[in-house]
Image 1 (cartoon, rainbow, N blue to C red):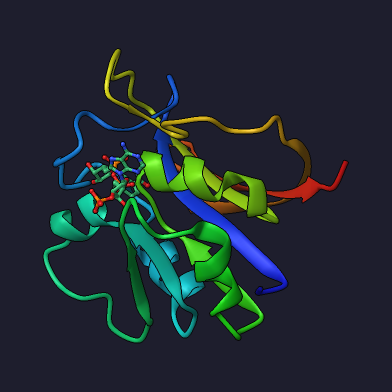
Image 2: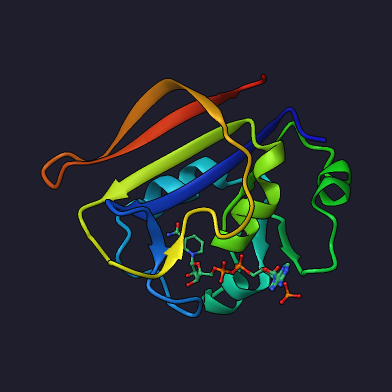
Amino acid sequence: MPKEVILIAAVTVDGFIARHNREVTTWSKDLCLFKEQTLGHPVVMGSNTYDTLAAELEGRRMIVIHRNDNPQAILNNIYEDRCFIIGGGKTYARFSPYLTHLYITPHPFVFGKGIPLFDGETPALNLVFQKMVTVDEMDGIFQYQYKVMKS
Ligand SMILES: NC(=O)c1ccc[n+]([C@@H]2O[C@H](COP(=O)([O-])OP(=O)(O)OC[C@H]3O[C@@H](n4cnc5c(N)ncnc54)[C@H](OP(=O)(O)O)[C@@H]3O)[C@@H](O)[C@H]2O)c1
């Protein structure tokens, strides 16, 4: 199990990550930061998210999960110190018990409906703010990094 299991997501102000489960995420402004932060680390994603990708994520081992996969077993097979859970909503929820950090970038949209950040059962997580990274200062877009406190 990696020491750091980091959820990374772009969210709307009303807490959605996509309008529907096949949406290609074209609205997020943090793709450069996403690449910089995930490069060299394994990235875990659900099959829907994999299907929306235009290309393989170069420089990262891509682990695509399906409903019969066990999240704990997937993590136990990752020997690196850090991995990223990169979506989508079902996958964020399924890995939520194992998260050590959340990197969240709110964007100035309200979708009203769609795929929520956690699409499924999720435990309450006690978060402590660690750092803010500027994505686009003019548009007021910042990434908030939180550590999950063990209860
Ligand atoms: N804004 C962001 O940062 C961001 C990041 C990533 C993704 N997204 C968006 O999120 C959307 C996809 O999210 P998503 O939640 O639909 O999909 P997802 O998490 O990418 O993939 C669905 C996962 O849930 C599994 N699953 C399906 N039905 C299930 C069930 N009944 N019980 C347990 N597991 C089940 C699937 O397995 P099977 O393969 O067996 O069906 C698959 O592993 C896309 O639009 C994508 O663009 C946004």
